[in-house]
Structure formats: structure tokens, C-alpha cells
Amino acid sequence: MFTGLIVETGKIISIKESIYSTVLTVSVDKILEEIKLGDSIAVNGCCLTVTSFDASSISFDLLNETIRLTSFKILKVNNLVNLEPSLNFNEKIGGHFVTGHIDATGEIETLEQRDKDYFLKIKSDPQNLKYIALKGCITIDGISLTVAEVDSHNFSVWIIPHTFNVTNLCDKNSGDIVNLEFDILAKYVERLMAGN
Image (cartoon, rainbow, N blue to C red; front, side, top):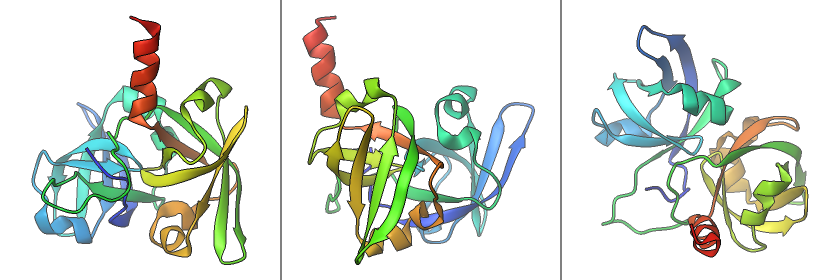
């Protein structure tokens, strides 16, 4: 479980095929302080397991399914990724409850500074937008954000300068693909209403 509050960004060092899996290695700094093998880290919002680490990097094994369903299929060496260690329940909880299970991807239509803040509009499959509510929570590349606008083809959020500068959003452009996780309550309500 995560909160969507990014601790740091890391840079992808390598994405290599091994005999057993695809191994993603990311440079890190802050989150190394308390890391252990087997820990869960949200990487661009996707919950991954630490399989190895050293004094400056962490590695993760990627499932083929993870690559297929997320933006990992297009990530490259030197791309920035958002990093958040799993939630400790003895700490303050900000953001919202985030599972680290990516529901869909979206495409950035607009990312621009407007006055002091940043405006981000994302296009996603129309069937995904039923999970997004005005003033509700959305997780974009692991970042907990509040929905400002939603229609039948896209949704928008406003970003404060701090969030823009300490996440991978500062490295994003129109046309880039991002990971989306919808509020868990919407998914459970849909399931209950379906009666299955």
C-alpha cells in the first residue's frame, strides 16, 4: 500500500533481459536508507519488488504482464521514474490509498505552465473515465492528484510547482504515456453493483 506522495525520482540505468526475467535497474538516493531485499517500491506507481541493490541503485524483476499493461514498455535508459517506498502505518498519511496496481495508461495531451501552476490534461480510453470523478483522487505515474475536470475523452489535474519539480513530470511532454491507477472505491462499487 502506498500514498501517492513521491519520495524521489530515480534515473533508469538499465533494462536488461536475463534468463529469468527483464531486470529494471534505477539509480536512487533517499530510499536506500531503509531498503531491504523483498521490499515493495512503487515505480511510476507500479508496485515492484526489490530483487537486488547496491550503494546507488535498486533492481526489480518485471513480469511480462507488467510490461504489457504499463508504460514500462516504452521506458528507456535515462528516463526519470517516480519512487515511493511502501506505507508505514506509524507515519502520517497524506495523498490517498494507492495499491500500486496499474489500471490503465493514458496519453498526455497538454502539460503547460499556467501562471505559477501547471495544467495537465490526459487522454484515456473512454471506458476508463467512468472511474474518475470531479474532485476525486487519481494516481498518475504514482503521484496522488485531485481531478479538476473530466469529460468523455480526457481528464485534467492542476499541479503545484513543488510536485512538478520533484517528480518525473518535469521530464514529460505531450504524447508521453503515463500509468494510471483509479481510486479503489470506484472499482469496488462497480463490482458490487454488477452483483458478480
